[in-house]
Length: 120
Image 1 (cartoon, rainbow, N blue to C red):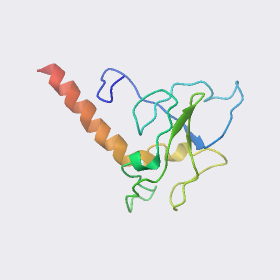
Image 2 (image 1 turned 45 degrees about the vertical axis):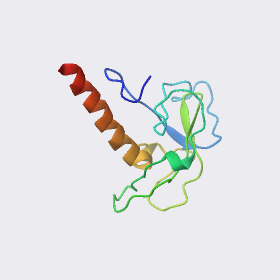
Image 3 (image 1 turned 120 degrees about the vertical axis):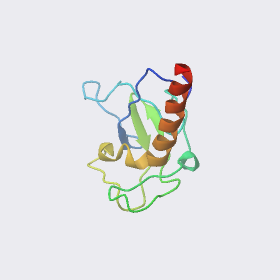
């Protein structure tokens, strides 16, 4: 699946690195894409691939704020060391977009351009 794919959906639920969910928990085994690579495999993506996160207050951009790796339908990230990225227990789900803000923005442009190109 290329990062410019259209007519699809993207989904992930971010958790602290190493979190193992029981098979009956909501996110376990779900659809998951790595927003640093735009792939669904379990390849580890280093933090330097993170163009920048934006904390919940949207008052700054934090390049390389976190890494990412898919495991059993959830996205693992190592502990975020800056303020503004709330974790509830082991879950960073509140920050699914903010941790990967610039990657999402850049990919939205790429997918939009691919869609518009198909229309011509």
